[in-house]
Image (tube, rainbow, N blue to C red; front, side, top):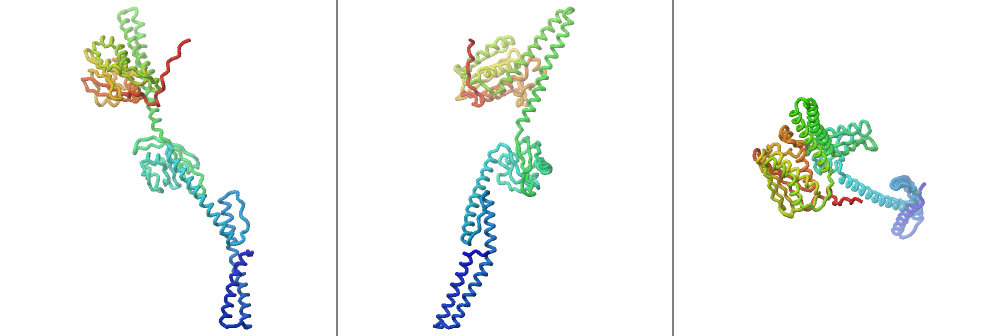
Length: 467
């Protein structure tokens, strides 16, 4: 059906043209004749016929365009009723202008959502990769780019195996695409830094046969290292505990048989049992101390380090004198800092005990304490047998001994220097060592006067009084 308004507009236009032709013809002849009148009527009739034909030829496309505009409006604005029959081009133009405005608003919303999704990806601590069905890398967030050494402007669409340098990622994506289900695995990265990543690949519910796969990556390097350290710790602790326990058991059995026949031998066995029991007690005590230190929580309070150092030195005076070792001290009066008094005392005690243990008779152990600007320095130097330079990087590891046989004979547990390192680091400081074989070692601990970082410390509270 031809819209009336459209047909009237076309007919009016043709009539105007026809009347203009008649007026021109009348002007040329100077007067109106019967032939001119007949021609004028013919032009009017022809204009009417042409107007109707043209209106019908335009009606179909305009109606189709109107229906398309209605469907588009319904798609852009879900729930909106499809517009009714449009009367003419003006109404259609108005509807199209409104659709253009809505499309522009919708495009702005999509752009904002895309930017927001990009910001979320950039802020994630995990790596995120997007691969297509052919195994080509399409998207990588900044964390993933740093883990795989990708440039910020890397070109999407290249094979993931070649770009990432780790075939395991593409293998997980292919497996997830084949199963159409999430797949988990472990990825090991060597360059630019050795990492162990927990990966999870899952297919997207895309429309069409695109088969895109998202791979999420979590860095579990530290977790794996902790697991290895825990296993090593259990093995080492079991071994260290087994040795004195086995010795005590064997000595006790021998003692039972020697009590009646050889009292002198029995006394020797009793002394050895006492030494092994003391060694076992030291090991258990060091394990408990290390456990407390590694827990990471400190009771922070003002600590007079000079007074604390004197107290610790006093507890070792008899031992030094018994072994004929000179124990010298140079303590700057009034040296203090904020920290955990018990753990700082453990640090000082471990260093002095280590120096006395590995210094031979008639040797010297020097203890120095001073302050420089905002740092406190505690130094213990001995004239012992020294440490080989190749062993220095490992001496702060738990249960590590330079000479295992001699160290066990001296009664060391292999945990003292590990305790020193943990206490120093938990207080925001550091420990360094200088050593020369045959000439002794010097351990230097540097601590901030302000105390440990806020993440480690908690204010000191006095114990509640007994009622």
